[in-house]
Amino acid sequence: MEKIAFLGLGRMGLPMARRLAAAGHPLTVWNRSPGRADGLAEAATAAEAVRGADVVVTMLSDPAAVAEVAGAIAARLAPGTLWIDMSSIGPAATAGLRERLPDGVGLVDAPVLGSVGPAATGDLVVYAGGEDADLDRARPVLEHLGRVRRCGGPGSGAALKVVVIGAIVASVAVVGEVLAVAEELGLSQELAREALTAGPLAGVVARAHSADSDFPVRLAAKDLALAGGGPVLSAAREVLLADPSIAERDLSAVVGSLRRR
Ligand SMILES: NC(=O)c1ccc[n+]([C@@H]2O[C@H](COP(=O)([O-])OP(=O)(O)OC[C@H]3O[C@@H](n4cnc5c(N)ncnc54)[C@H](OP(=O)(O)O)[C@@H]3O)[C@@H](O)[C@H]2O)c1
Image (cartoon, rainbow, N blue to C red; front, side):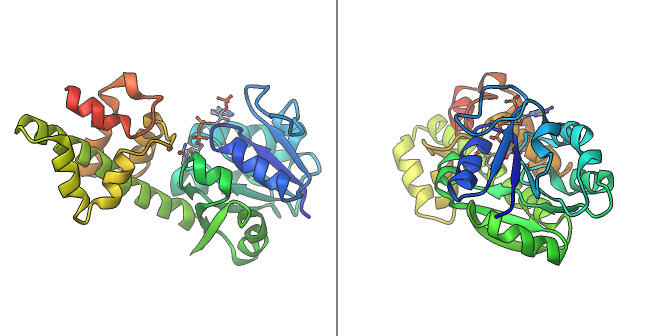
């Protein structure tokens, strides 16, 4: 089995790394802030973690984090290494990462849909983009983490993630706002929620009230920024950023935040 270096043990990265270890992959992990490895073999630096690795998996917060880690490890990767970046960083940062890699190092962009529960049970949806040979090689690793949707060439997984999460995050903000409108109009939350759930927004209403997701508003706002400057998604981003007190809480916190405004 491929020897894996897993970099980034945040709320998503740690359960994902655990799954790869449980599947039998020789695994070395690294996190910027030490002490997050929870019994997994931890390296002191990112460079040490990737030494001798066949596959490098990154699950980091944003483009700046991936760029910083790339600065520490890219030049050290031997030809034949495959880097699977599962962070949500969008296609432009993914292209920037590709440019920094030495010849012979492959890159698959493989961001995921699904929060901490699916990360622990291997039920994420993985949007994978890359060269065919790299996607073939990444698949057995990624299948331990979820259902792999092969999107196409380099950057296509990163691009599809931006599209799908942009729609989800903006729609959750819409549901939060119309529930606040319902309150102003004297309707009960239960009645409004039930009526919305009976229509095409059912899945969004469920996400807006999810009790077991842990996707910080800070990261949701980052994803809306990655989707560009369109009017609707930009407005949703402003809504998320307007209440700094919910930045570290799950996206569902925007519903209560809008009712309080
Ligand atoms: N949470 C979700 O439900 C969810 C679902 C799908 C996709 N995602 C995406 O998955 C990615 C990870 O999300 P998460 O929820 O696991 O985030 P998180 O809990 O905030 O973890 C972020 C990770 O990035 C590391 N990091 C941040 N800046 C860094 C830097 N400059 N250098 C090195 N490491 C750095 C953090 O290290 P420290 O511990 O040192 O801060 C941590 O390991 C994000 O792109 C997010 O949008 C999240």
